Length: 333
Ligand code: ACO
Image 1 (tube, rainbow, N blue to C red):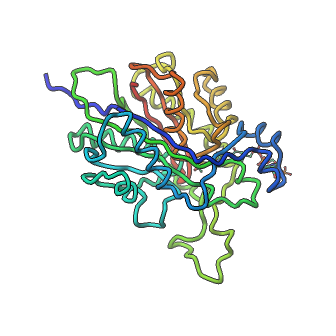
Image 2 (cartoon, protein in one colour):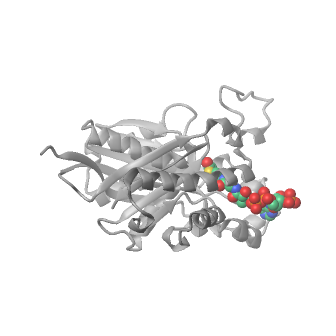
Image 3 (cartoon, protein in one colour):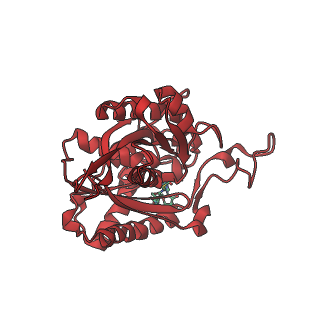
């Protein structure tokens, strides 16, 4: 009997900057309050990168921790995927190439994935396909962001929502007849029609940066919060239902749902709509806020640290973000 190759998560790791900023700290910058932020989002704190800290610096720390956990030397990594909406540089070099050099992955290809907050989910699926086709044995997937660098710190509508951080997972080829481990399936989707709902308007080739003319605030992230909220609630439910239908699994089979940590109210609305107990969702947004592509791997690392992940557990990840993008994975832990 031909053995199928499975893509198994061998090690995960995360890193957040040491600077911790509370809601009360933000209330000194903009007209807001701990009460408003917590009641509207579930956020209490976020970690913010130092001035000299870029996305790759966080990614390197998370990657090294994941490799150490996996017991895999960097030289064995075949491919590095960095999911980020806040790369070190615009266009090139990719952040993945900078990470490749810094961790000493001398035999790896490297590229970035741009799918905003859904980036890690896209990365896991990309790694699965490379591994299951027998192309690569070891793929390092990293979600890393320094959203603080593209946030308008005078805009209370956005600056209270985001945090910086990185999380990484090493996926390895595993040949067994029927292992209850690895990436079972994924669902990747997009809705480019509403691209303008969440974007950085200036600095690309559509509206280039013009020295002396471009208002500095146009370089920051812009968001229509209500539209993102409505989109998120609808696609989280759709993704969960699609993944279950694809696999023939039921909600009872899933140990934990690990959602992109954007807003507790979005998760609560989705849980209510699908009649899922809130306890099935792992939440750590209170401490880290929305770290975009890093939020799911940071959550998984947190769960592992808390002893919540056991071999054979079925974990469902689900996310949404700029693009607009959405999707999820089902993982056998
Ligand atoms: N402090 C105090 N008041 C505020 C703040 C703040 N930080 N921010 C907004 N307000 C005010 C608004 O000005 C508004 O006042 P007004 O009624 O006088 O105009 C009032 O609060 C209500 O504003 P709403 O937009 O209706 O607030 P809402 O309850 O919708 O919450 C929020 C806003 C938290 C942004 C919500 O819409 C949301 O979470 N949206 C999704 C955002 C998201 O997930 N973004 C990440 C996308 S992922 C990625 O790719 C990066």
